Length: 434
Image 1 (cartoon, one colour):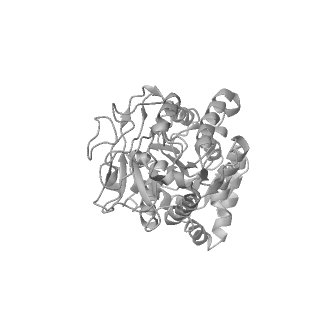
Image 2 (tube, helix red, strand yellow):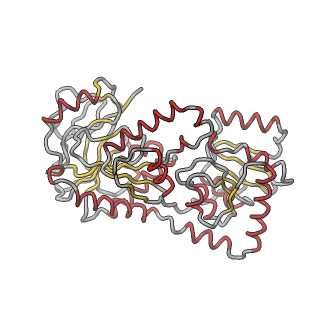
Image 3 (cartoon, rainbow, N blue to C red):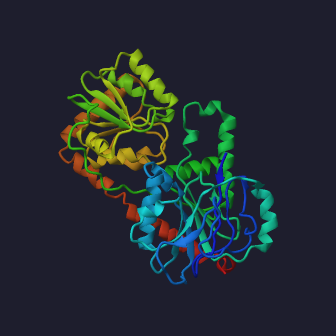
């Protein structure tokens, strides 16, 4: 396995310096420079370098490293979170702290015209166990002028090697606890929980996207008194829809579900429901090149639903928006969600949304959706019929759903994180920012 490590190099006046490592088991420092500074603008072929995106005087503000490495996957949930958090922090940081973005190569294009410090990160081969390296290097580390390090997802490999730097850890979900078969894989669950706990031990504070995830953490992870904050995610303005019906979709009414074909998404129960509902087609859009996607295709064939179930795979943003705007209703039977963006995206279009009561979905949807109490086909169909009738009787149903969605703002997400940064910066030991 390839892991990555970050080291802050001196490349412009006032930039932070000092060694850093990944949060995995091994790391390597560049030969001859692990404890020192690097001449401005120089970097190893495989190593990262920190620089500014625009000339700037040395900042007197406390520096906060924000891990935006997931921008390398801009279209996934963590990529979108990284994008909007970074953009919002650049607005909210003024006069309070200086963000230092940990970025993959080329990701600066997502922040056009903005001035900020950055750390470039490239893969390194692991050679030394970090747990062996740390006791030897810590006595020689210079005082860090990074005041706070934000680990923006629980899978991140990036942590400061200097354990004097406070760490804010975002944990988006513990979905592995709620997937089908979790009870039959106790060793796997223990390993995953141990991995989470290793990061929690390093954290000064924790943030989750929902109160459900915060409760999940308290129940399954030894938090050791670490404070947990809840900062809900935001929702972007919808993209422009495609100008016409997607080629893969025949004329006629259809129901919609969206998500990658993974077992916890539970899409197959919708086939049972569809057999109870004459008429509408079902579109399940998302990556299907998975084992569960293969199972879905087999089920469509076995049940002779090929004329009613459409699995188009991943679709463009325009087609996705067209589907949201023209579906009869949105269905989301997922058993495990840390947040549940598709629910809000469908509500943004004023559509009736039917979902499971699992994990965070009731918290996110509030009383603006309809909930499946059983995954039995007739029960699913009965919930659907009753919900559609209720929505049809309420002339303000769509407007209320849109108003609910409007409370989820990326700007407010960034402001929530900035407030937590402020609190941690006020509480930090003086030595951590000397």
